[in-house]
Image (tube, rainbow, N blue to C red; front, side, top):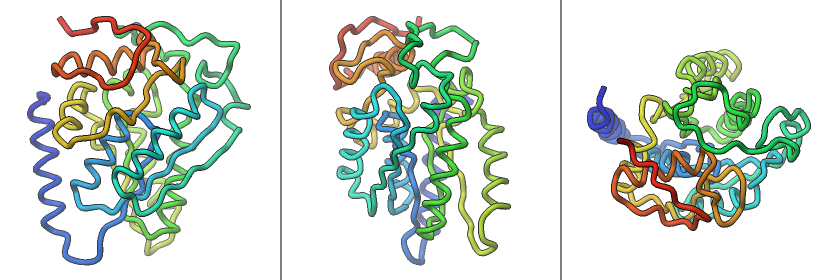
Length: 253
């Protein structure tokens, strides 16, 4: 499927979902990391007719203060019905990631690498989705949205489509019989460039997003997260609105 086909398919799905909603407003929890992917996922959920419940988790990541600031700003921008901020230290105590362990260096970007990067937080998405599912069930929500995409699961095993399919089964089995919560990963077949294009069309406030793994301001511009983000904006010919210490050219050849 081409990037254009992916965008068109999602837009058709969104229109169909919105047209079929006749009852009370649908509700969706959005896992709001503070980053551009989850902010775009919130915009897509709103486009599909969902009332938004944003969940942000601080777990000891290097840039947790900036991420929280951005997630809160996004909740205000999207006029979310609720914003829940959870703080946990178990992922940082478990360790094994350069995002939570100050003794591990955040690596420079290698956009062609196939290995699991040191920034991988072991089984993080299962932990976050479990929190989001609890939040969704307690608030009679219909869906949980996550911004994971194809360039994530090339390096992060808990971003694979199979993972979300399996987690859907866990939700179906592990919640009340009358609970029906859909795990939505609308970008799972998309590139970062697709996401930037869609978000630009939806006027996502990218000035209120943060991706850098190293620093809270300015963004470094050279870690994996910065590189993929800058490349996406460069590919669509739009200037990324946040500040960077460096802005290398990552445009695809």
